[in-house]
Image (cartoon, rainbow, N blue to C red; front, top):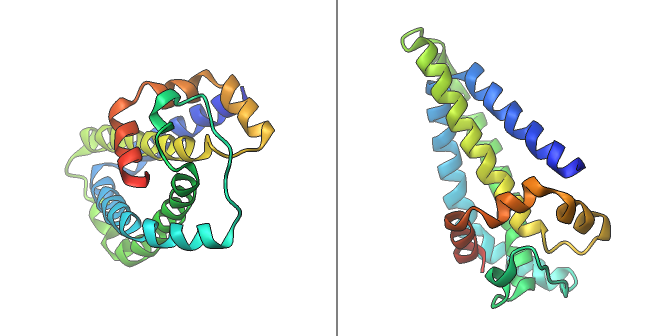
Length: 175
């Protein structure tokens, strides 16, 4: 219940944020996320391998993804996932700082309402993908309280189970 509430709040906040910011800022934001994604994709295997050497092995499996993760090295998937998430966040912050100078473009009153609605849709999609990646990686986190939250959250299970394209993409990326 708590996890479902958090997910719904994040999606709602992202849609409101996207509406407020608008399309032009979202284009800059999407470019930031793409650059961060490819940078994190490049850094995750190297950093994940380093994390595997430092931290203990993960011997926890999950039933939520079913067969999707059955053939993977879960330890490698978990630490590459952690490395991907951290790299993605750091790169996003750095790139946003660098692109802050282009913020004046978002204030142009050219597109009006369409600008805001498209911004809301794009930000909602970005938030959904980020939530999906976090849920896919952290479904392997062995803490009992987390597993209970994940098992009791219909929204989290729906996101994990009913997004097959993203599931395969994340498995190919981190597996």
